[in-house]
Length: 272
Image (cartoon, rainbow, N blue to C red; front, side, top):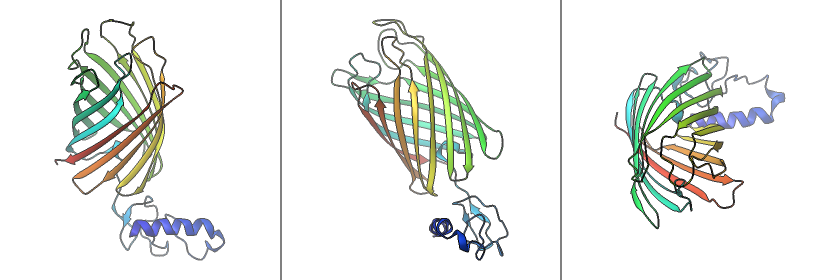
């Protein structure tokens, strides 16, 4: 109810600037400045009658509290590890443990195409967040890709991650990131190379429980014969309740007519 009030007040303010002097609510929390004891609460925070926050939203990519999450996902995509890029169905499971500004995760899965099936590679990842100021955060990480995908020449790969997130207002995030993967697989068909990726995007919390982002990504292939892929991606995050959450991700590759879209859905549970 308080969130809806804020949205209505925002629209009212934008269309009735001439009357702004009669009703002042600088932080648009639904509490007039004359009685607001906390005049700079973030937009979409839940506030009490005094205008002070009782709950602050947390972005999915910016979880700070300690805890353990488990998630299960299903997706349809193109297999980037095969030359003919067959349609691939995947089932994934992931565990993430949060401790202070650190996160530790393990992810693995099972894939199936028209010609083969089996385990995907298993990815271990550790990430550290640094709060540069109240609006800017830096993330650094290391990933290890274990060769549980059974094919000749598959070896352990290593990835370095970096990300930067800026919050101009509490409900809006602007983010960018880059990674470099050291490919150790043996050359079987085409020569291989290390992989560089980059992404940039923006996200918005429409309510306390509903978040949407959109991003552009550039990713090199480990096969030297392939051109880098350029994609537009979007993710919807919905917090069902205090324990359950779900995400829906969609990706569309551009500038390459031979590749199709990919779609993934995930359900997660916060164990503690």
